[in-house]
Length: 65
Image 1 (cartoon, rainbow, N blue to C red):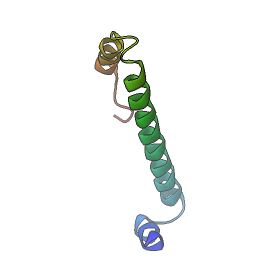
Image 2 (spheres, helix red, strand yellow):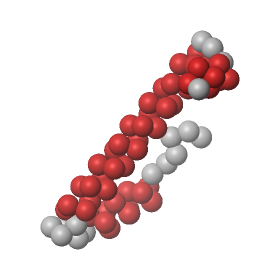
Image 3 (cartoon, rainbow, N blue to C red):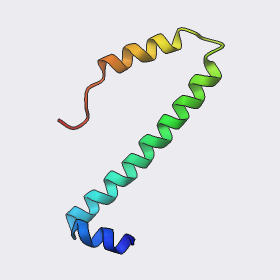
């Protein structure tokens, strides 16, 4: 199935770009999981963390425009 998906995407730079996007999505998912774990473990110690994270999220800009 992986070969079929790669064949559908194309070859050359399109394949490389597709693999890079998949790698970055996995990395983002891992970082989000780590953030959730850290947030849960530190919530009792620092209740203002949620407020700070909410403020940061409000300032975030999309990576791709």
